[in-house]
Length: 465
Image 1 (cartoon, rainbow, N blue to C red):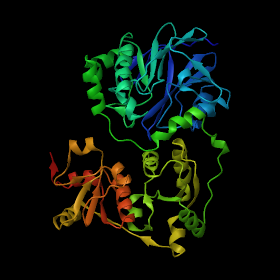
Image 2: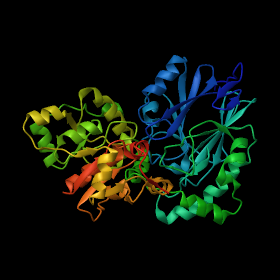
Image 3: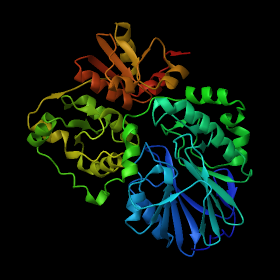
Image 4: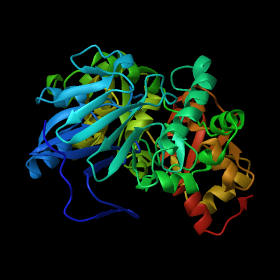
């Protein structure tokens, strides 16, 4: 195979200078992950941990006049649908751990195996922990080396070990302890390229999305400073927050091999009557418009999930995996919403319609008060419950004085506060709008704090601690 190409000069990546390998990251801001194009010379490249929608990956390779020869998977992903099968349809070989048990054409690797791309070598390193079958790839070109660590060692932390079931969490946490030390034994100058980063629900600790080196992590990663395995397990597990429900399904999707995106039917515009029938048959109506538009007027029982980077995560938290979805949005939003939904395996989108068409058809609508901080404060003094719906770590760090707490994930699971009137809030208002829409469906009098805790802080109102 082709010789791995050396760069003509050092390249600055974040605050890390590297020579040798040419690595091009594509960061998925929606899910907090990064995939990597690695040039291996003579017009060839490999991709590591690509997401399902690979158009950006293919475009980057085309712009650099590269052919994607292989795709390397570090583990079975729980948070996104892999793009390996999409790239395989374009001629790439799929390489994954034998223990992943992929059910489509691939090369199964074993830890300790060395793959050769011309003068470039790729060592398969066993790094179980985040998942049982997890491997890392150590790539050398004779001048420099880099390790693609997936969800083992990440910048500032490590990935969680509870996604394959509670019964294996401690066992895998102990394996993660050993795997991090395996990687920490690499030379200081080894560049670290993790898949998971800041914003990923797979991460624990103060994970960041930036470049690093093994030496940099030994000096700064708090998990590498823990020398006792039992203490490590305890600290790691205390960093686990809640995570979207769809995570419980995607490992199997990626093992079987996802449906090719080109095989999915187009998402048709629905008449209000057709949309109403599909909703009556069990489809979830998701209002992806900006939250202020949703608050002002929306279809009765629609769930607000504003279209933004986090749309995929909250769609996968609110809607049971495999359930049918009808999207309420404007036509220019459809492509982005569909891409994010497909990225997490939500393929049962039965159509879309605008709120205007629903309203003009005379179908049931509703509204929710969007309160500014002064209005929310006054209503709370009159007895309304200020409810923080952020994750526990966010609430414990700082919250509005006298606020109660109930995570949005718990609200989705059916928990409801014992209060006649509720004011939901989060950081900026989007998550709390989702919570408010769920409470409204349950018949609770609810309002949403416009701008969230950021607006409350800007207004100079009280926080704890």
